[in-house]
Image 1 (tube, rainbow, N blue to C red):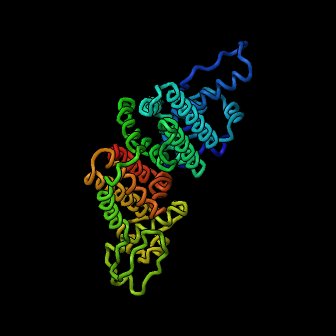
Image 2 (image 1 turned 180 degrees about the vertical axis):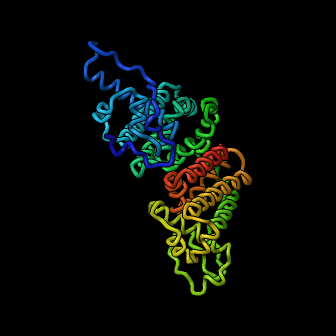
Image 3 (image 1 turned 120 degrees about the vertical axis):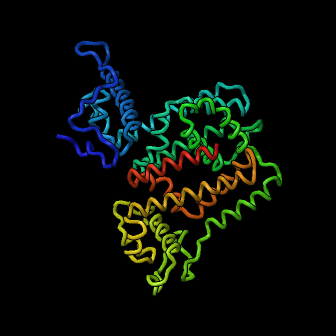
Length: 394
């Protein structure tokens, strides 16, 4: 009898029950052999972890099943449940093991490099870039689909990356960049690795230059005019626009009471803006699957019929909200590129994006967690946004 966690809740394509799954590892020999129980357990665990990485890289976390993992690993169902509670437990523990091994290798490379910030940072980033892309993607992307525990694990991995960068970038007197800067830099480098794909290792030198430039102290007064320009652009982008009734749309997550007579005379563009803002706000605090068009319409102060005629359904509202939020972030990065060059451009881009997202936590949560938990179409848009943002920053 199949256990409950054999049924993956996501929309990815699952292995069909009648499909034969060929193992990707050679089974242990039958009969007498020299391996003890601990060695057998370790061998099976390594095969299960490798099989899980293969399954997730092929179908994604949502479509992951125990049946596929044990089929690829060539182990029995009993052996799987002797080591893991369910597919979710197996995924999280595998992700943690991958992150720990990856950063351990980077730290070793950093420690073995010549005693200079450039050499240490370059060695650490090259070690990470040379790691298994499927494993890195599992830790940095697929964990976003694995609930709050997965998101927390990803945060831990980025924190480990920040600590590694801190050790690599320390100056002669032991000084380094502030921890928040390093944590953001770790996330930026992770985002840049993904669109590079197989060329990531060759780009390690460029990424090292970026890390050194961002972490180094800014030239006194060099960014004053540019920063003011960027902040003005940020202010215009994030300030709620007034609707036809003079009430500002709730971009910052504040509640809004529908004004009387709204359904008769509201501007269609203002209505649409309120709908997508409300959809993102609700989705960032509640499971998307439990939302409804009437809830979104009520939060926006817009008639249900107007929402249905403009967007069609709940998922379309959420997807439009995520698309709009992504475009705003990319616009800030592009603006930074227009007003500065080189490392200074990246500094301004990071400052602008962080300020933009800090001013609207719902937007930040939407572009990370919500986008990866709202179905295949929303995830596809999130993947596209990550690739575009990584390319823009690079």
